[in-house]
Length: 403
Image (tube, rainbow, N blue to C red):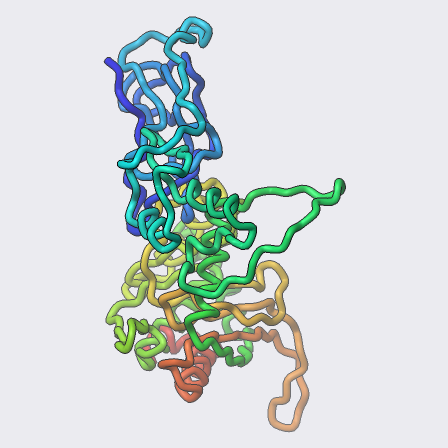
């Protein structure tokens, strides 16, 4: 029995994906729940698994093709025995890579909006989507061919004034590589933060000696009991949660002319992955123990590197923490993660001279940075937030008794 291999629901706000890699070939036997094809979204990679034992008979969407939710990627024969690919050549008829659209060509709301805003005739645009659907990429390619001043950014900000993309001659020593969907999304969101929010950064420094001593004294017992290493991030998460409770506007969101205060503490942890930056969320961090937080962070890091994070794990979040110190950064100005209004940047711990009374002594110090949306957060609140976090980190016993 033949079945379509379709693009599954990809999560909230994710409607398109790119075929990253076919893991099985035409004619190759596949077991139930075995991955057949990997899709790349602007958040994570998603594998499409076989519904039952069978064989792939047709591949309709080639690697690199942009596809929408519900699009047919190929066809699968349930229960068929695995055969050599040559014996299935008669089944492996691929759809044309480009075919003229009909006047009634299917369009997603985003594509229809792009067509209408540019006064285009959808029927005149060649399509590459499954079942003849018109994709955003088709429209952008058409616009680029019609006018050299049209750019792909029109799809994301059609109402904004965009400078034309200058002609670029490629030197033989250069290599052109298309951005991954994740990298494109990161770029879009970072630019969105700069364009829509009034971002300002304030700095402070934390003396880490007390925290380092506590970690040194208890890390072995902690790891033995909880089966996870005791890091610094759990202390920073706890300190931020307590500071957010005192200054709820740093945990808020701007929505038009309204401020949405969030009575929960879903803390995003920026994690580097081979394909780009991802921000998985620790839900209800105020109710999580130090061990819970450390286990979540370790799990996020491992699955980010292997591309196994779920889209649902990166949706939402009320505040973000990023640690450039693990890469050696001494100081930076992190960019907020819209629609959040605050992000804390951690940095490298470095020995520096500090003044205590009338003496100069050596201490382990870390610069911390809070970037915030100045539209709703005033300097007094931002500075107070950092001071509260600093006080708790320099005297970590305060984190245990919530003061």
